[in-house]
Length: 335
Image (cartoon, rainbow, N blue to C red; front, side):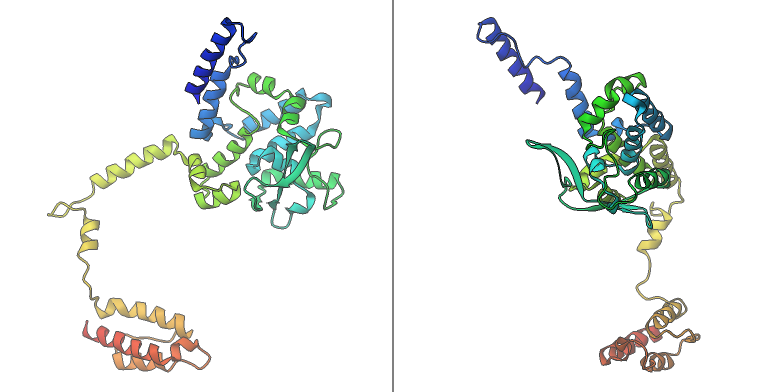
């Protein structure tokens, strides 16, 4: 893309010199910065996230202070978007009926997007609904928004100061976003950076990647994995693990003791090691805890398992299981 733009700029510069066009529309001021930011977002979205809760709260308050009438709703949108890792269009599309205050889950069903006829609500980007947890830090905010609209199921949870729908452009202009983030030292932050913030925080909190993918609504696991870049502490811990491995006692053959033990396990185990496992198996199948098999008595073992109570699972009483049990017990008696 960068090389294509460079060629286009040069071609149009020649067109200006030849008098074909009055100006070069491809020479856009600041496109290099925009291109670099887009690359960062694709390669490392973590770099575009806010560092902590204090930074998020400061941003929310600053946006409210800069907006006309100090509209508190803009701060609520900021906090909610970051804590749910949602897109601004999805925040605009949330209705009261989508919020489960018993389990504190949000069912993301729709998003607000521009269209030729104006703003419309349509399905989410992934074309499927998903569940997002509402953490303790946003529950009071959400409950307040529900109370404001008197709990009407079809009411929007977030709207502009005049009750209109929210878009990322409306949010930007109403809060003077670019000026505010620059004054706070977050020049790199865009509205979508709130989503990056939420996903980064969840990844750092240890949310499994497959769960994080569901919350984010990503179609590809690769997209989600970009949020899992280890921090410095994790990298240091990896080095400590390698050191511990290299310093572990070695067997005469040069292998670690753990590895040697794994490779030298016998295929047959002594009866006194196997019996507790069989006890657990029998308890799971028949529901009885009185199966004491020490010392090992193959004949008694076979009889006890095959005389499972009538109320027990049908599998225990099947002829096939009877044959299998006799063979297993016969092998145990030879160990």
